[in-house]
Image (cartoon, rainbow, N blue to C red; front, top):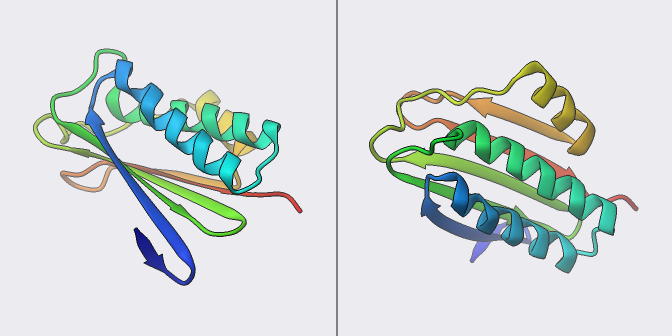
Length: 128
């Protein structure tokens, strides 16, 4: 799906439980690989996606759906995950250690307790 400015958008909706986070990681890894990201960059993105999506759904999961939107250009992938449905009023949490890990893995990230729709966001830029 086209997102404007030469960007493409891919959307994934899964139940907001930890066992489905694998699909978010696989999708992000596949898109990054297709864009020519190095193996290490793909692995960094995969780990970052896991950390941020887990911040939304937690160890026990939530009621509702995790919607993940991937926006890709020739050198950049941006990912926004939003918790939809009942139970989405629970604010996502990211530990200080998790925040430090993410700072090392991606170019930018955020956890947004956006009212009734908490979300996570990250950007990873391909080197070179």
